[in-house]
Image 1: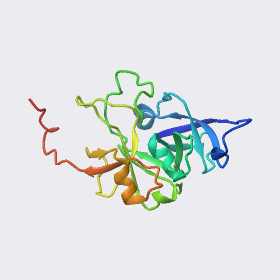
Image 2: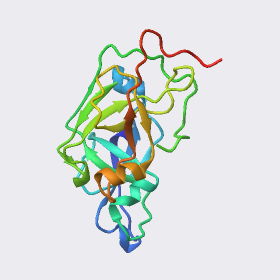
Image 3: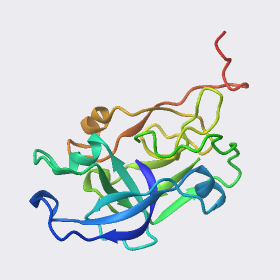
Length: 111
Length: 87
């Protein structure tokens, strides 16, 4: 589950019934530099299914892939990114030292 | 690299300890964005941990509807060095 910042919302005029229950938000994952040094850089944005009521600017956990469909149980739902947590605090070790990723990883790895 | 807390979360995650972990490549550079890892082994901050992305393992622990994926499966005893590189 990557950590993302909510930057907006997506509204649908029509959609499949399975996803009627929640809201669709736009989020950008936070890379190491953002979490460790508060850098402004963000990963590639993606649309997230949210039932927790995350507002703009909220920091959330992005469940992706197969795990994103787990909360829907047996109901087949076309969701591949699910908001699993609305974080109260992310407490990062201030002196964690790790050189930032050399190649820019455009969301190529499905976490 | 840190810990995270959330009161608003999926019910299966209640009471679980959440770590913020930066996955590493073989040459200790960052591999993708940091992820939330569920920990029941008591890893401390700054620890190198062995994690698994076997969602099924977490489903058995937390329930079939859990959105979580990564969990700590071991805390290697690295001793002095960073673990010898295999020849």
